[in-house]
Image (tube, rainbow, N blue to C red; front, side, top):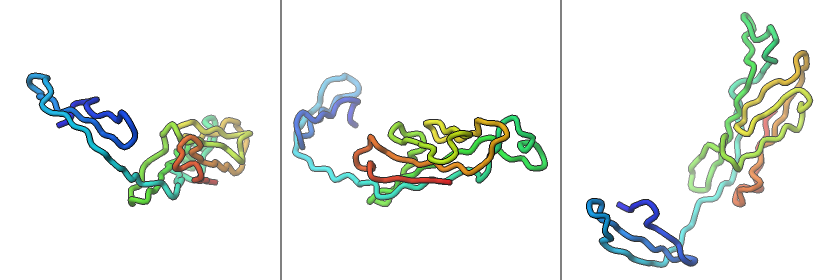
Length: 144
């Protein structure tokens, strides 16, 4: 069992760790070693939607029988070379940009899309990028 903050990297490729007795709080042993880590890299991004149509919150289309939702949730996932797929929908490195329909729609930093202008209609295209995530910086997803 490693105690919180008991591992550090004082220089490149060196791992220091300290094992502490959980009863006394005293160190049992410590050690240093060279390490080399190969981390999986993301190679693709996907964007899925919760539904295909939305309407303004004041529109009667939100009522029965149409029951058109007033918001749409995007789901962003990155696939890694390890085979893992991670949800990046609410990750701070995920950036949403409306490239078509920005005059009547909005998207939050968490991927929630809404219609901002009553009486407007049209296609909405949202581009998803990861500009501050170095390994995923070249990846891009989009949904219309």
